Length: 361
Length: 68
Image 1 (cartoon, rainbow over the protein chains, first blue to last red):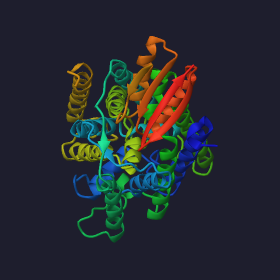
Image 2 (image 1 turned 90 degrees about the vertical axis):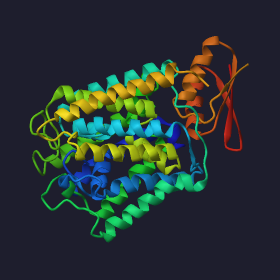
Image 3 (image 1 turned 90 degrees about the horizontal axis):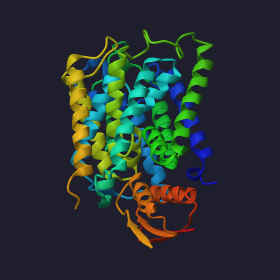
Protein backbone atom coordinates (compact mmCIF):
# COMPACT_ATOMS: atom_id res chain seq x y z
CA UNK A 1 0.00 0.00 0.00
CA UNK A 2 1.27 3.45 -0.87
CA UNK A 3 1.03 5.50 2.30
CA UNK A 4 0.19 8.68 0.46
CA UNK A 5 -2.68 7.15 -1.49
CA UNK A 6 -4.78 6.02 1.39
CA UNK A 7 -6.72 7.76 4.12
CA UNK A 8 -5.58 4.99 6.43
CA UNK A 9 -1.98 6.10 5.94
CA UNK A 10 -2.57 9.67 7.02
CA UNK A 11 -4.80 8.54 9.90
CA UNK A 12 -1.99 6.33 11.23
CA UNK A 13 0.54 9.13 10.71
CA UNK A 14 -1.67 11.65 12.50
CA UNK A 15 -2.19 9.22 15.38
CA UNK A 16 1.57 8.66 15.71
CA UNK A 17 2.14 12.43 15.75
CA UNK A 18 -0.51 12.83 18.45
CA UNK A 19 1.16 10.21 20.65
CA UNK A 20 4.59 11.77 19.99
CA UNK A 21 3.23 15.19 21.00
CA UNK A 22 1.88 13.89 24.31
CA UNK A 23 5.05 11.90 25.06
CA UNK A 24 7.28 14.93 24.41
CA UNK A 25 5.48 16.67 27.29
CA UNK A 26 6.12 13.60 29.44
CA UNK A 27 9.80 13.84 28.54
CA UNK A 28 10.05 17.50 29.47
CA UNK A 29 8.49 19.82 26.88
CA UNK A 30 6.08 22.54 28.08
CA UNK A 31 2.51 21.40 28.76
CA UNK A 32 0.21 21.23 25.73
CA UNK A 33 3.31 21.95 23.63
CA UNK A 34 4.61 18.56 22.54
CA UNK A 35 5.53 20.30 19.38
CA UNK A 36 4.48 23.73 18.22
CA UNK A 37 6.13 25.01 15.07
CA UNK A 38 5.52 28.68 15.86
CA UNK A 39 6.65 28.44 19.49
CA UNK A 40 9.70 26.37 18.60
CA UNK A 41 10.83 28.63 15.75
CA UNK A 42 10.37 31.48 18.24
CA UNK A 43 12.49 29.64 20.82
CA UNK A 44 15.17 28.94 18.21
CA UNK A 45 15.16 32.61 17.19
CA UNK A 46 15.70 33.44 20.86
CA UNK A 47 18.45 30.85 21.21
CA UNK A 48 20.28 32.65 18.41
CA UNK A 49 19.87 35.91 20.31
CA UNK A 50 17.65 37.52 17.68
CA UNK A 51 15.18 38.45 20.40
CA UNK A 52 15.88 39.01 24.07
CA UNK A 53 12.91 37.40 25.79
CA UNK A 54 14.92 35.34 28.29
CA UNK A 55 11.99 32.97 28.96
CA UNK A 56 11.91 31.57 25.42
CA UNK A 57 15.45 30.94 24.23
CA UNK A 58 16.39 27.42 23.14
CA UNK A 59 17.34 25.96 19.76
CA UNK A 60 14.59 23.36 19.45
CA UNK A 61 15.79 20.05 17.97
CA UNK A 62 12.21 19.23 16.90
CA UNK A 63 12.38 21.89 14.17
CA UNK A 64 15.77 20.59 13.01
CA UNK A 65 14.41 17.04 13.00
CA UNK A 66 11.27 17.90 11.03
CA UNK A 67 13.26 19.58 8.23
CA UNK A 68 15.90 16.83 8.12
CA UNK A 69 13.30 14.04 8.41
CA UNK A 70 11.58 15.51 5.39
CA UNK A 71 14.89 15.82 3.51
CA UNK A 72 15.86 12.21 4.19
CA UNK A 73 12.45 10.96 3.02
CA UNK A 74 12.47 13.24 -0.03
CA UNK A 75 15.94 12.04 -1.03
CA UNK A 76 14.91 8.40 -0.59
CA UNK A 77 11.81 8.84 -2.77
CA UNK A 78 13.42 11.15 -5.37
CA UNK A 79 11.16 14.00 -4.27
CA UNK A 80 14.04 16.30 -3.31
CA UNK A 81 13.65 18.85 -6.09
CA UNK A 82 15.14 22.30 -5.50
CA UNK A 83 12.73 24.94 -6.71
CA UNK A 84 11.79 28.51 -5.95
CA UNK A 85 11.03 31.91 -7.41
CA UNK A 86 7.30 32.08 -6.70
CA UNK A 87 6.92 35.53 -5.11
CA UNK A 88 9.61 34.88 -2.46
CA UNK A 89 9.46 38.25 -0.70
CA UNK A 90 5.67 38.19 -0.57
CA UNK A 91 5.96 34.79 1.10
CA UNK A 92 8.45 36.15 3.63
CA UNK A 93 6.01 38.94 4.55
CA UNK A 94 3.14 36.45 4.87
CA UNK A 95 5.35 34.24 7.05
CA UNK A 96 6.13 37.24 9.23
CA UNK A 97 2.46 38.00 9.86
CA UNK A 98 1.45 34.35 10.25
CA UNK A 99 3.89 34.29 13.19
CA UNK A 100 2.36 37.50 14.59
CA UNK A 101 -1.03 35.74 14.48
CA UNK A 102 0.33 32.57 16.05
CA UNK A 103 1.99 34.47 18.90
CA UNK A 104 -1.25 36.36 19.56
CA UNK A 105 -2.95 32.98 20.06
CA UNK A 106 0.20 31.32 21.46
CA UNK A 107 0.54 28.42 19.09
CA UNK A 108 0.58 27.22 15.50
CA UNK A 109 -2.30 25.16 14.05
CA UNK A 110 -0.69 21.96 15.39
CA UNK A 111 -0.45 23.36 18.89
CA UNK A 112 -4.06 24.53 18.56
CA UNK A 113 -5.07 20.89 18.09
CA UNK A 114 -2.69 19.76 20.85
CA UNK A 115 -4.17 22.41 23.19
CA UNK A 116 -7.66 21.12 22.39
CA UNK A 117 -6.46 17.61 23.23
CA UNK A 118 -5.21 18.94 26.57
CA UNK A 119 -8.67 20.30 27.41
CA UNK A 120 -7.83 23.97 26.69
CA UNK A 121 -11.19 25.46 25.69
CA UNK A 122 -9.51 28.74 24.63
CA UNK A 123 -8.31 26.85 21.57
CA UNK A 124 -11.93 26.39 20.47
CA UNK A 125 -12.03 30.13 19.77
CA UNK A 126 -8.71 29.81 17.99
CA UNK A 127 -10.20 27.04 15.86
CA UNK A 128 -13.22 29.18 14.98
CA UNK A 129 -10.94 32.03 13.86
CA UNK A 130 -8.67 29.58 12.03
CA UNK A 131 -11.59 28.20 10.01
CA UNK A 132 -12.83 31.73 9.20
CA UNK A 133 -9.34 32.67 8.02
CA UNK A 134 -9.18 29.60 5.81
CA UNK A 135 -12.60 30.45 4.35
CA UNK A 136 -11.27 33.92 3.49
CA UNK A 137 -8.28 32.33 1.73
CA UNK A 138 -10.50 29.83 -0.09
CA UNK A 139 -12.63 32.73 -1.37
CA UNK A 140 -9.56 34.18 -3.09
CA UNK A 141 -8.38 30.76 -4.36
CA UNK A 142 -11.75 30.28 -6.01
CA UNK A 143 -11.37 33.69 -7.66
CA UNK A 144 -7.98 32.74 -9.13
CA UNK A 145 -5.46 33.72 -6.41
CA UNK A 146 -1.91 32.64 -7.29
CA UNK A 147 1.63 33.61 -6.31
CA UNK A 148 2.61 32.42 -9.79
CA UNK A 149 4.84 29.55 -10.73
CA UNK A 150 8.14 28.42 -9.24
CA UNK A 151 11.17 27.25 -11.21
CA UNK A 152 13.89 24.65 -10.88
CA UNK A 153 16.84 25.86 -8.82
CA UNK A 154 20.42 24.65 -8.34
CA UNK A 155 20.94 21.96 -5.69
CA UNK A 156 22.63 24.41 -3.32
CA UNK A 157 19.53 26.64 -3.27
CA UNK A 158 17.40 23.71 -2.15
CA UNK A 159 19.97 22.20 0.19
CA UNK A 160 20.85 25.43 2.00
CA UNK A 161 18.11 25.32 4.64
CA UNK A 162 18.62 21.64 5.54
CA UNK A 163 22.34 22.42 5.91
CA UNK A 164 21.47 25.40 8.14
CA UNK A 165 19.56 22.95 10.36
CA UNK A 166 22.68 20.82 10.75
CA UNK A 167 24.62 23.97 11.70
CA UNK A 168 21.92 24.79 14.28
CA UNK A 169 22.23 21.28 15.72
CA UNK A 170 26.00 21.72 16.06
CA UNK A 171 25.49 25.09 17.76
CA UNK A 172 22.96 23.54 20.15
CA UNK A 173 25.30 20.72 21.16
CA UNK A 174 28.51 22.79 21.22
CA UNK A 175 26.70 25.60 23.05
CA UNK A 176 29.19 28.43 22.44
CA UNK A 177 28.73 31.56 24.58
CA UNK A 178 26.68 33.46 21.99
CA UNK A 179 23.97 30.79 21.92
CA UNK A 180 21.36 31.59 24.57
CA UNK A 181 19.54 29.15 26.83
CA UNK A 182 16.65 29.98 29.14
CA UNK A 183 17.82 29.37 32.71
CA UNK A 184 16.26 26.49 34.64
CA UNK A 185 12.85 27.54 35.90
CA UNK A 186 13.02 30.69 33.78
CA UNK A 187 10.12 29.91 31.45
CA UNK A 188 8.94 27.61 28.64
CA UNK A 189 12.38 27.73 27.00
CA UNK A 190 13.81 25.83 29.96
CA UNK A 191 11.31 23.01 29.56
CA UNK A 192 12.52 20.55 27.01
CA UNK A 193 13.08 16.87 26.45
CA UNK A 194 16.64 15.59 26.00
CA UNK A 195 18.17 16.68 22.69
CA UNK A 196 18.25 13.16 21.24
CA UNK A 197 14.58 12.51 22.13
CA UNK A 198 13.47 15.83 20.62
CA UNK A 199 15.57 15.25 17.51
CA UNK A 200 14.25 11.73 16.93
CA UNK A 201 10.67 12.93 17.54
CA UNK A 202 11.23 15.66 14.96
CA UNK A 203 12.68 13.20 12.46
CA UNK A 204 9.65 10.91 12.87
CA UNK A 205 7.15 13.76 12.52
CA UNK A 206 9.04 15.26 9.56
CA UNK A 207 9.23 11.94 7.73
CA UNK A 208 5.55 11.14 8.31
CA UNK A 209 4.48 14.64 7.29
CA UNK A 210 6.57 14.44 4.12
CA UNK A 211 5.08 11.11 3.07
CA UNK A 212 1.47 11.98 3.90
CA UNK A 213 1.55 15.73 2.98
CA UNK A 214 0.03 16.39 6.41
CA UNK A 215 -1.12 20.00 6.79
CA UNK A 216 -3.63 21.52 9.20
CA UNK A 217 -4.52 24.38 6.86
CA UNK A 218 -4.76 22.03 3.89
CA UNK A 219 -7.13 19.83 5.90
CA UNK A 220 -9.89 22.42 6.14
CA UNK A 221 -9.00 24.10 2.83
CA UNK A 222 -9.45 20.89 0.80
CA UNK A 223 -12.78 20.20 2.48
CA UNK A 224 -14.08 23.66 1.55
CA UNK A 225 -12.57 23.62 -1.95
CA UNK A 226 -13.09 20.04 -3.11
CA UNK A 227 -15.00 18.16 -0.36
CA UNK A 228 -11.75 16.18 0.05
CA UNK A 229 -11.44 14.95 3.65
CA UNK A 230 -8.09 13.13 3.38
CA UNK A 231 -5.84 15.73 5.04
CA UNK A 232 -8.44 16.60 7.66
CA UNK A 233 -8.54 12.92 8.69
CA UNK A 234 -4.89 13.26 9.70
CA UNK A 235 -5.64 16.26 11.93
CA UNK A 236 -8.60 14.52 13.56
CA UNK A 237 -6.47 11.42 14.18
CA UNK A 238 -3.74 13.58 15.75
CA UNK A 239 -6.31 15.16 18.06
CA UNK A 240 -7.84 11.83 19.06
CA UNK A 241 -4.51 10.10 19.69
CA UNK A 242 -3.11 13.04 21.65
CA UNK A 243 -6.32 13.24 23.73
CA UNK A 244 -6.29 9.52 24.56
CA UNK A 245 -2.57 9.58 25.44
CA UNK A 246 -3.08 12.68 27.60
CA UNK A 247 -5.97 11.02 29.45
CA UNK A 248 -3.88 7.89 30.09
CA UNK A 249 -0.90 9.95 31.32
CA UNK A 250 -3.24 12.10 33.41
CA UNK A 251 -4.09 9.00 35.44
CA UNK A 252 -0.56 9.08 36.82
CA UNK A 253 -0.27 12.86 37.22
CA UNK A 254 -3.72 14.45 37.69
CA UNK A 255 -4.14 17.75 35.85
CA UNK A 256 -0.71 17.70 34.22
CA UNK A 257 -1.72 16.39 30.81
CA UNK A 258 -5.44 17.14 30.64
CA UNK A 259 -7.41 19.89 32.33
CA UNK A 260 -10.75 20.93 30.87
CA UNK A 261 -11.56 24.65 31.00
CA UNK A 262 -10.41 28.12 29.99
CA UNK A 263 -8.66 29.49 33.08
CA UNK A 264 -5.03 28.78 33.98
CA UNK A 265 -4.23 26.69 30.95
CA UNK A 266 -0.50 26.27 30.27
CA UNK A 267 1.08 28.94 28.02
CA UNK A 268 -2.32 30.35 27.06
CA UNK A 269 -4.61 33.31 27.74
CA UNK A 270 -8.39 33.61 27.98
CA UNK A 271 -9.08 36.54 25.63
CA UNK A 272 -11.43 34.71 23.25
CA UNK A 273 -11.68 37.49 20.67
CA UNK A 274 -7.92 37.83 20.17
CA UNK A 275 -7.39 34.08 20.27
CA UNK A 276 -9.82 33.93 17.36
CA UNK A 277 -8.37 36.90 15.48
CA UNK A 278 -4.80 35.63 15.90
CA UNK A 279 -5.71 32.31 14.34
CA UNK A 280 -7.82 34.02 11.69
CA UNK A 281 -4.66 35.80 10.55
CA UNK A 282 -2.74 32.52 10.74
CA UNK A 283 -5.34 30.57 8.73
CA UNK A 284 -5.76 33.30 6.10
CA UNK A 285 -1.99 33.80 5.68
CA UNK A 286 -1.29 30.07 5.52
CA UNK A 287 -3.86 29.46 2.76
CA UNK A 288 -2.17 32.25 0.78
CA UNK A 289 1.17 30.51 1.43
CA UNK A 290 -0.16 27.09 0.45
CA UNK A 291 0.36 25.39 3.81
CA UNK A 292 0.69 25.71 7.58
CA UNK A 293 4.06 26.36 9.32
CA UNK A 294 4.66 22.60 9.64
CA UNK A 295 4.06 22.11 5.92
CA UNK A 296 6.48 24.97 5.18
CA UNK A 297 9.19 23.16 7.19
CA UNK A 298 8.52 19.93 5.29
CA UNK A 299 8.58 21.69 1.90
CA UNK A 300 11.84 23.35 2.96
CA UNK A 301 13.22 19.87 3.55
CA UNK A 302 12.20 18.92 0.00
CA UNK A 303 14.34 21.75 -1.40
CA UNK A 304 11.69 24.45 -1.77
CA UNK A 305 13.51 27.75 -1.25
CA UNK A 306 10.24 29.73 -1.26
CA UNK A 307 9.22 27.78 1.83
CA UNK A 308 12.70 28.34 3.29
CA UNK A 309 12.14 32.09 2.97
CA UNK A 310 8.70 31.65 4.55
CA UNK A 311 10.41 29.97 7.52
CA UNK A 312 12.84 32.91 7.69
CA UNK A 313 9.78 35.18 7.69
CA UNK A 314 8.31 33.18 10.57
CA UNK A 315 11.56 33.64 12.51
CA UNK A 316 11.65 37.34 11.70
CA UNK A 317 8.07 37.68 12.90
CA UNK A 318 9.00 35.93 16.15
CA UNK A 319 11.97 38.23 16.70
CA UNK A 320 9.83 41.33 16.12
CA UNK A 321 7.02 39.94 18.28
CA UNK A 322 9.28 39.56 21.30
CA UNK A 323 11.50 42.60 20.74
CA UNK A 324 8.51 44.93 20.39
CA UNK A 325 6.04 43.38 22.82
CA UNK A 326 3.63 42.01 20.23
CA UNK A 327 3.47 38.45 21.60
CA UNK A 328 0.79 37.52 24.10
CA UNK A 329 1.53 35.96 27.47
CA UNK A 330 -0.53 34.13 30.07
CA UNK A 331 -1.65 37.62 31.16
CA UNK A 332 -3.26 38.17 27.76
CA UNK A 333 -2.60 40.03 24.53
CA UNK A 334 -0.78 43.36 24.39
CA UNK A 335 -2.14 46.55 22.82
CA UNK A 336 0.75 46.58 20.34
CA UNK A 337 0.07 42.92 19.50
CA UNK A 338 -3.57 43.71 18.70
CA UNK A 339 -2.49 46.50 16.34
CA UNK A 340 0.01 44.15 14.69
CA UNK A 341 -2.66 41.46 14.13
CA UNK A 342 -5.02 44.01 12.54
CA UNK A 343 -2.19 45.24 10.30
CA UNK A 344 -1.41 41.61 9.43
CA UNK A 345 -5.00 40.88 8.39
CA UNK A 346 -5.02 44.03 6.23
CA UNK A 347 -1.65 43.13 4.64
CA UNK A 348 -2.81 39.57 3.92
CA UNK A 349 -6.01 40.93 2.35
CA UNK A 350 -4.03 43.35 0.17
CA UNK A 351 -1.67 40.54 -0.94
CA UNK A 352 -4.68 38.33 -1.66
CA UNK A 353 -6.45 41.05 -3.70
CA UNK A 354 -3.34 42.03 -5.68
CA UNK A 355 -2.61 38.40 -6.60
CA UNK A 356 -6.23 37.63 -7.44
CA UNK A 357 -7.57 40.70 -9.21
CA UNK A 358 -4.28 42.30 -10.29
CA UNK A 359 -3.07 42.33 -13.87
CA UNK A 360 -2.39 38.78 -15.06
CA UNK A 361 0.79 38.14 -16.99
CA UNK B 1 -9.53 18.52 -25.60
CA UNK B 2 -8.81 21.35 -23.15
CA UNK B 3 -5.20 21.47 -21.94
CA UNK B 4 -4.22 22.95 -18.59
CA UNK B 5 -0.63 24.00 -17.91
CA UNK B 6 -0.10 23.92 -14.14
CA UNK B 7 3.67 23.52 -14.18
CA UNK B 8 5.44 25.28 -11.33
CA UNK B 9 2.22 25.71 -9.37
CA UNK B 10 1.67 24.15 -5.98
CA UNK B 11 -1.49 22.60 -4.69
CA UNK B 12 -4.28 23.41 -4.50
CA UNK B 13 -3.84 25.65 -7.57
CA UNK B 14 -3.55 22.87 -10.21
CA UNK B 15 -6.71 21.22 -8.87
CA UNK B 16 -8.56 24.55 -8.79
CA UNK B 17 -7.49 25.21 -12.41
CA UNK B 18 -8.67 21.76 -13.47
CA UNK B 19 -11.96 22.15 -11.62
CA UNK B 20 -12.59 25.49 -13.32
CA UNK B 21 -11.69 23.98 -16.71
CA UNK B 22 -14.11 21.10 -16.08
CA UNK B 23 -16.97 23.57 -16.07
CA UNK B 24 -16.98 23.09 -19.87
CA UNK B 25 -18.11 19.49 -19.30
CA UNK B 26 -15.80 17.83 -21.84
CA UNK B 27 -15.06 14.10 -21.87
CA UNK B 28 -11.27 14.54 -21.97
CA UNK B 29 -8.71 16.89 -20.48
CA UNK B 30 -4.95 17.08 -20.34
CA UNK B 31 -3.12 18.72 -17.44
CA UNK B 32 0.62 19.11 -16.94
CA UNK B 33 2.14 19.42 -13.45
CA UNK B 34 5.74 19.21 -12.23
CA UNK B 35 5.52 17.78 -8.73
CA UNK B 36 4.28 14.54 -7.27
CA UNK B 37 1.91 16.19 -4.79
CA UNK B 38 0.02 17.90 -7.63
CA UNK B 39 0.05 14.65 -9.61
CA UNK B 40 -1.51 12.78 -6.68
CA UNK B 41 -4.07 15.48 -5.90
CA UNK B 42 -5.13 15.99 -9.52
CA UNK B 43 -5.46 12.21 -9.96
CA UNK B 44 -7.58 11.87 -6.82
CA UNK B 45 -9.81 14.78 -7.81
CA UNK B 46 -10.25 13.62 -11.41
CA UNK B 47 -11.07 10.04 -10.38
CA UNK B 48 -13.58 11.41 -7.89
CA UNK B 49 -15.20 13.31 -10.79
CA UNK B 50 -15.53 10.08 -12.74
CA UNK B 51 -12.52 10.37 -15.06
CA UNK B 52 -9.95 7.65 -15.79
CA UNK B 53 -6.45 9.05 -15.42
CA UNK B 54 -3.30 8.01 -17.27
CA UNK B 55 0.06 9.59 -16.47
CA UNK B 56 3.20 10.02 -18.54
CA UNK B 57 6.42 11.45 -17.11
CA UNK B 58 9.13 13.34 -18.94
CA UNK B 59 12.01 15.23 -17.34
CA UNK B 60 10.24 15.67 -14.01
CA UNK B 61 6.99 16.82 -15.59
CA UNK B 62 3.81 14.77 -15.45
CA UNK B 63 1.19 14.91 -18.16
CA UNK B 64 -2.13 13.54 -16.95
CA UNK B 65 -4.72 12.55 -19.51
CA UNK B 66 -8.28 12.42 -18.18
CA UNK B 67 -11.02 10.54 -19.99
CA UNK B 68 -14.54 9.37 -19.22
